[in-house]
Length: 263
Ligand SMILES: [Zn+2]
Image (cartoon, rainbow, N blue to C red; front, side, top):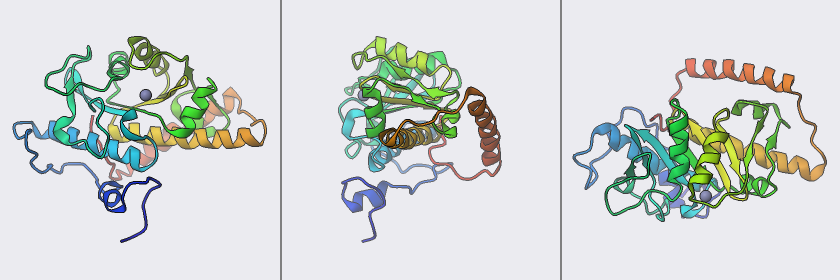
């Protein structure tokens, strides 16, 4: 069998099944027992959520059932259930929940549903939310520090830093509100002594933002371990932000296939 495509400890066969393989666009998912009556679009969103949840683990961006993934759906959201790790989750176990946490069925939505709901309630253009505990983000969040403008790519999150909320008990509305406020003007934030939260217009965008935040946070911690990083000025980061927006438009114009292009 080929080389391991990611840094996880999962069996290689499993990883080859779940890593970087899908361009989910108009493909109709295979019939899954229990969701035969579902609309194709709902089935596609459920499939994308499960694949994304698994790839977060595969890329070392999340461990076990600590993180959670949602996509806005109708007046509510489709969200990973509480307590089921990625390798066990199947499409029909993704929970349809209201933005008040209401849900039907035996499985409960993620204990952090309030964080996801808070983002959807505040931002009409948020189509997907990812919460995780990736190592570097957790480490910096335990210092209760924002990710500052040590590198121009920090401007890609919408400002001159990625803020860090205070520590608030997990699974509470208070944490949801703090995280929702932090994402009003940024695409991601750190959660004090906890982890991170990212949003996107699509699930693929939220995934890319999650991955970019973890990489930059790791690079910041590396720089910090060698000295005091020189921070960019507000003007420098604003200029980088403008170029980032143009870069995004150019990338979109190329119409390259994107995974999990659902919202
Ligand atoms: Zn968490």
